[in-house]
Amino acid sequence: MRVLLVEDELVIARAVSLMLKSECGAVVDVVDTGEEALEMARHYNYDAVILDLMHGDGFDVLRRLRAAGRNVPVLVLTGLVRPQAKVQAFSAGADDVMTKPFDRAELVARVRAIVRRSKGHSQPGLQVGPMLLDLDSRQVSVDGQPVHLTGKEYSILELLTLRRGMVLTKEAFLNHLYGGMDEPEMKIIDVFICKLRKKLAQAGAGNLIGTVWGRGYVMRAPEAAPEHRMPAVAPARSLEEILLPSATCSADNDAAHGLSTAQRILESA
Image 1 (cartoon, rainbow, N blue to C red):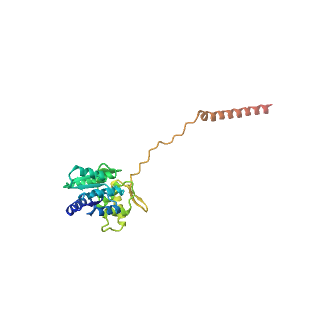
Image 2: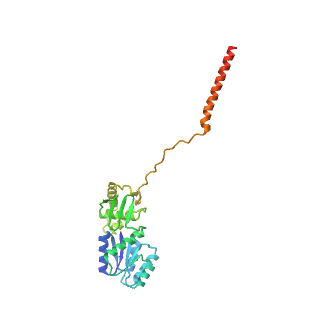
Image 3: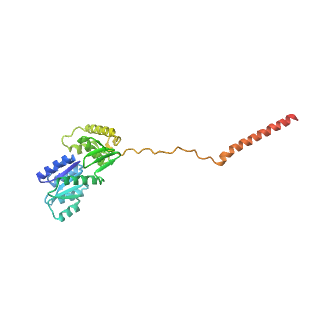
């Protein structure tokens, strides 16, 4: 998960950033002005934006973000307690609003919720074939048996599962795993995918991650089992097909018998 945090209070920004990293394994980009936020949103594909209203300037940032066609889910943080402020935030395009001071666990839960809803998932448990990925606990199981993954392996699997059916490039993986900081070579993604596939296959969930050559990787549903078809039955023969051959044979036999009788009569004459 990659999150853009727009917060001008350094203490809050640091606390929220550390919390998201430890609880969600998120890569967090922190900016303290609206212009920086809009610039970052133009260049990177974020899973969520946490936007402080910054004494009201956040409303303008949110409107411009939506006007630019960015549909990233946005959680607004505000110190304004009046209901009109929340109504205004929702009208500007916010997906959720929290009032300061806020509970840390609630903030994490709300971020997870808006991210999964933005991908079309109403529940934290994402099922693909025999595999179940729990976004809240960050646990993976296959047919009820846990699969032990490293932090990076889980992040890759989460990214693929949330975007099931979409082809993700290696650049997209690096973007979400490292956020441009100390990025390794792109071939490291192949290594992670190989290890992830091996663990899933050993657990009984092979063939979930497909390769699209020259493009990247995709999460797909396991192939449907072939249908069990009844053996083909020869169509019933018609009455003519049943009777005519024997009738023909009888006619041929009668003709042959008649010819033989005629020959004997001629020979005896």
